[in-house]
Length: 239
Ligand code: BJW
View 1 (tube, rainbow, N blue to C red):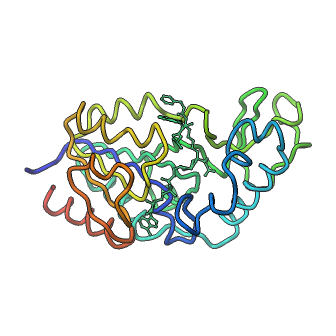
View 2 (view 1 turned 135 degrees about the horizontal axis):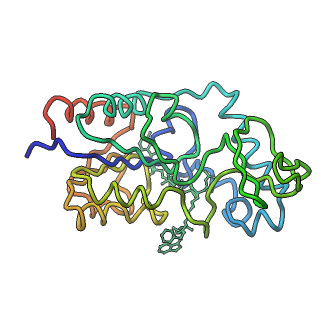
């Protein structure tokens, strides 16, 4: 059946793997090197902010100076947004900036952005390409100790949830790309799309995710191959 309605696309770390960024839960992933409880919770930041800053400063430096570029999958999604007759909302769990670098505009970073900092005291958010540290004062409230990466840690509320829920309610196609389906609420989006919005649901991933059985259609392979092919199919055949 031809599909020309609004689209919601969820992406995860797998889409940036071929750009040179590690995923989290693969055998060579970030969680094989670091314990979540040490670097990705508000409690970790309260207990040892220097260790958390080191973890994110290292990743920020790699993103800013490491010649990390969008790949064919990011570029195909930007092309889809430009060419599709209805809204295409890209919801990424990634904190890198590869979707915007590829040209995507309707984009929600539900787990935050590595190249931004936030003051935990007053909520001020600013672009940040340098290292963060515990002595850094907030330029707005002037207090120290609160400048933190603008990312969403376990136990914190993801960003843009209302806008995401509205878009999923309206969509006729939901596509999940390069995510293991282990982290909620993102892992639950497919159920909302399939059973509430009655959208067609598609998984594009290297291998079946934890939520594989919830998708009506699945295509497996590296993102740089399967995403451009899927976008081409959508734009030429509308399904
Ligand atoms: C390729 C490829 C290639 C490889 N091509 N593919 C029970 C029920 C519901 C919720 C919970 C629950 N128990 C606990 C919770 C809450 C918790 C949670 O989900 N925990 C689970 C571990 C169980 N969630 C939260 O705390 C979230 N907040 C929350 O729930 O607030 C309350 C709330 C209530 C109701 C509504 C709304 C909110 C916050 C989660 C924050 C996640 N933060 C992190 C780190 C911060 C950012 C950072 O440092 O980068 O975000 S964790 C980490 O996982 C990161 C990622 O965005 C996230 C998802 O990972 P992703 O992208 O799926 O990566 P991987 O590595 O897991 O998978 C990669 C995939 O790519 C694999 O499948 C590969 O095969 C594939 N791949 N190469 C294509 N070349």
